[in-house]
Length: 540
Ligand SMILES: O=P(O)(O)OC[C@H]1O[C@H](O)[C@H](O)[C@@H](O)[C@@H]1O
Image 1 (cartoon, helix red, strand yellow):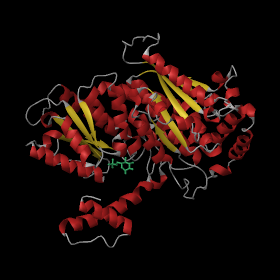
Image 2 (cartoon, helix red, strand yellow; image 1 turned 45 degrees about the horizontal axis):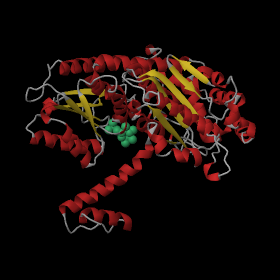
Image 3 (cartoon, rainbow, N blue to C red; image 1 turned 90 degrees about the vertical axis):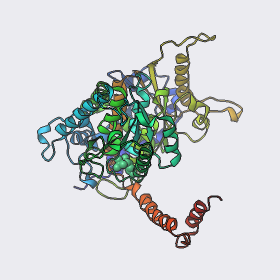
Image 4 (cartoon, protein in one colour; image 1 turned 135 degrees about the horizontal axis):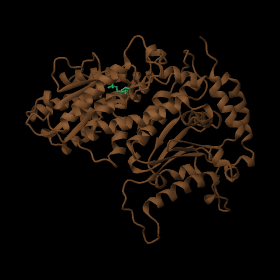
């Protein structure tokens, strides 16, 4: 069925018109945020999750047309189809059932060709049993010692989400098993990791859906050599998380255990499958992982059921579309005022940019409007002392501030200025959003701030497995909603393939040179030849 293009929708035309009026002074944020009802009208709260979009450059008319855009795109209907297991990833002919990993399928009877929930439950029981056995030392290392550390070997979706959740939770829960991450093919990544672990008490978790990803396979090779050099048997030290039937699915028991991930859950949406489930259960226990899933599930239910006007992921997707397609901001920063959330931005970078950085519509036509924008971020206040100069006086970009009401550390003391560190942190978060919105007049133009720079503020009460789950599922749902409204497929990633093909061609030539010193790189373009010659010469 041919779909109406995003930019042919009536609401798109109306929004385009409304965006032109915004240059009038009365729409400057410094005036709009003075309205006593503004926060109430442009914020939403759900289950300890607060989303304030009152400092976005919107008014009631813009909001209404944005909601029309979502309605005209049938965003909520598409979201329901996704959670029901319909084929929404049409280019790969797959469902996108990451929500099922948190036990959410409205009508499982409709799923005919796969028993999604029983497969998910089977793997979760396996994870529960395995992690308990590691914790109570029923499973020990080759030399009979209890495991103390685990290294996750994986990249992209098989790494980033897990690192985000682990980093967040280790602030509030002492890990039983310490996790380390080996993602990059850079041999120095491997070199650093092996410095921090004791080979005799370390478990290696290879995570790869395809089990063909070059970086992961190259690192696995290093690990196998490392185990051999340390006279340790991989069948006692290595586990795999991979798709059923992949080369790493191990019926021959060459490794300690194998856990399945499924083609109905995409890599960047897979933290709540065995990809996050195994390492996080090893680190904190299966019960903590379950609490994390419950947080995701609560947000999933909200994303499916809340009406458009109260739907936080949907509204934030609309704001993002407004900022990119109508106000023409090229990027968005994610700034958590919380060190525990330091790995959120790298995770959302992949989730968002791999999902929405698309050049074709759902039905295969080239696109002439903006899809995904650039996402980047760092925790505050650190970010204030690095790139916020540009945020305030350079090319503007919307910022998403994230605050946590109560810190984990409960012995914070007031300094000589009578303020606690955590209060100082919040004072800065509040001030930055205000400064971006208000700006400041000054006769000295070097000290003049235009203001009118949009931001949102997201607040959670504290760092718990549940709240981290909600945060994760919020970003997933928002990404998916944005894709549905933009009329693109947020589940494929063909854009990563071309570079891989070229790398494989270059690799073939490197292999030749490794076996024949006289081999030349003359068949390449001059720059490629230069880099390869430099690599082999060992110096510039
Ligand atoms: O899990 P794997 O098959 O090893 O894939 C790991 C990652 O690599 C690919 O290049 C994709 O861009 C990612 O979406 C994927 O998550």
